[in-house]
Image (tube, rainbow, N blue to C red; front, side, top):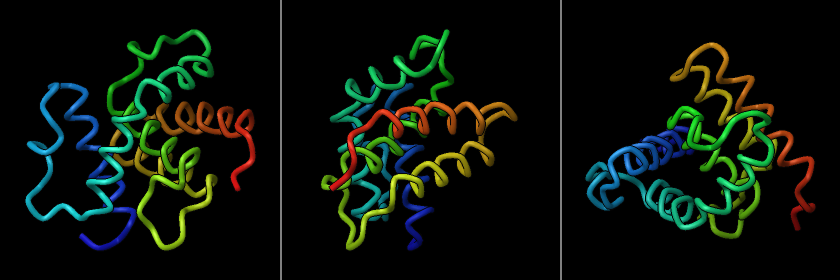
Length: 134
């Protein structure tokens, strides 16, 4: 698994499994999981409370707990790359818009038909309100 998109998706599924089961992340990674995948997942769960506040603020009429767990995980990982690129181990961080695009693509592949628009709407609203990246 060498492509960053694949590694991001693996981080999303690890965060998702952690969210559902409460098991430690180190028990959930594939043996050959890339350092990028591991770092994304760990940093995402470390900042989960911050991300959930933002998601809840922008998910009009939805509590974070009511959002599909996979969609939550997709948004959390995207928010890490959007808002905290310094925590992502990469030679060149993905632009915030790229993180949104990756999240929407993942939602298209693994969630129901409404999920991509929902994910895009929340992440775009958060980006609009976020301070500019340096």
